[in-house]
Length: 287
Image (tube, rainbow, N blue to C red):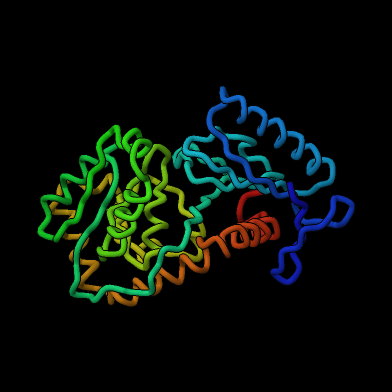
């Protein structure tokens, strides 16, 4: 728990006896039956009682693949998380994004080096879309992991597989990004980190900073409800390639990572965004 004061876009941690703008807390929530999650929720309820009594706000970063909904539509609580149900989203929940470590080696790919990469499981609808990609005319570098892959990792050196993953990101202009267990893609942010271009098959993901990051500029963004066959997929990719300077998009994506999703900037951007929402509460339906 931290008491936060923002002055001229500078984030200050103050004491509870000083004037503050909001209380900030980070938690990882799983399911309501999880003992640790229940304890975290009790702590959050206590913090909410403090902000309610003092007419302040509680800002929560909520990690976890499938966190429960907490304090829905509460005007004194702002929640950032990744796995959000688009159709039932409370108005006080916002996309978090993922802070990922920097593995960038400073290189970009020439526009004529077109290939699509992917390393991961076939979970959820991934198999359906992997099959579509395999039917396109583009060069593919797909490494599909078996279902027992995590058990294999425990017995072997995980560093080898992580290097394989990041080498695949680096060596391919595009990377296929789709949701995992939760409705978000860490791979999307890792692709930005590497200065490459995501191909997002969108499952109604709630992305962060929609007023600052245009998904159609940083990625090939395809609503999965519109993706009926591989011909549509090929057409979308070809259209993007023909209309854009791929080197410039790679460089811009790297800048977006550095500004929003690197370990040096991630929390700062979230806290400043929360402050903006507090100051413009009517605009963000927080009144």
